[in-house]
Length: 70
Image (cartoon, rainbow, N blue to C red):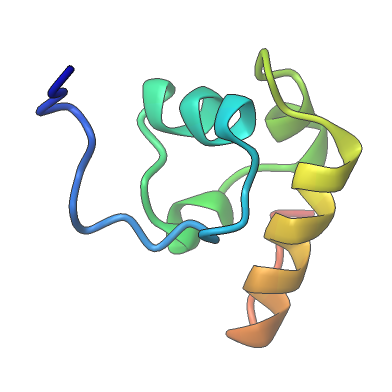
């Protein structure tokens, strides 16, 4: 099943669980820098997002010197 909606330019963590990855991409978030405009509580409201996925995103952002919005 080919899905052209999966953007090649995504830089979300490769180890991110599929439900969390789908939750982000279906909401239009394909780049880590887009998450800097969101609060952690907003990300957690996405269906399929859990504490482990949030921690992976937090770590990936920190590696770039970025964080979620306050």
